[in-house]
Amino acid sequence: MEYYQKSAYRSNKKYKQKSSGGLPDLLLFYILPFIVFNSILFYCVASSPKINLEIQDTKDYLSTQASMTIESWFPTKSISFNMDGEELEPVKDKRRTYSVPITRNGVLEVTVVNLNGMSSTVFKHVNVLDDIPPSFENATLEDGILMLRVTDSQSLVNSDAIYAVDSAGIQHAPLSVERIEDTIDNTTAYSITFEMDLNGLHVYVQDKAGNEAQKTFTTHKEGNLDVLEVGPEEDQTDQGNAAPDALPAENQETEPASEESSAASSSGSSDVSIVIE
Image (cartoon, rainbow, N blue to C red; front, top):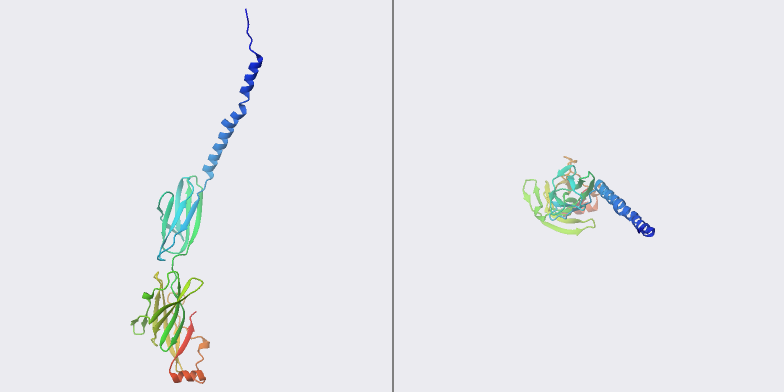
C-alpha cells in the first residue's frame, strides 16, 4: 500500500501567499472606508453656505436690484433679505439665484442657513440711488437779475422742473439754465437766473430722481442798495422757521461816505453777491 504525503514546501507557500494579502485588505476594506465616511460626515455637519451678493446698476436712480447666488450645493433651510431692519421678499431666479428690488439706499443684509444649521451672512451697502436734493451754493443779485449756482450729483438737475413763485403767487420760469462745470467729486454745477422780485422770490429746483430743494430770496434796502437775503432751505427741518440770513459782514460795507457807494448810488444799479452756507 502506498501513501502520499503533501509537500510541506507547497503548503507553506500557499499559506504565505494568503497571509501576505492582509495589509492591502485592511487598507481597502477598513481604513479607506473609515476615512471616506468621516470626511462625508464632517462635510455634512460643518458645511456653511457660500454666497455671492451683487447690486445692479440703476437706470433711473430711483430703484435697482440686488442679486444673490448660492455657490455651494448643500441643501438650504432658509434665506432672508433684510434692508435696515425691514424684511424683503426674495424672488427665485434660475438655479440657486435670488433677487429683490431695492428702492432706497442703505445696508442690505442677506442670511442663508443650510439644512445642517450652519449659516452665512453677507452685507452690502447700497448707494447707487439718488436720495439727495440739489444744493444752492451761492446767489448774486445784479441789475434786478438773481443768479444762482446750484449743484447736484448722480441724476443731475431737471431743467424742466425749475421754477420760482413771486410775492404775488405768480409762477415764473427761469431766464436761463446752464450746466457750467463737473467737479472731481462727481458733482455737477448749474447756473440759473431769474428776474428778481424785490419783495420775495421762492425758487424750486428738482433733480431727475424727483428730489426737490426750495429756497426763498428777499431783499432789503441799505442806503440806495438792494441787499439780498436768503432764507433756509425748506428740506432742512432743523432750521424750522428761522429768519432769513442777512448778507455777510464783509459785503455790507455800503456806507454812502465811501467812493464806491457814491458811485453805486449815482448809477442806481446794485451788485450784491453772497455765499450760501
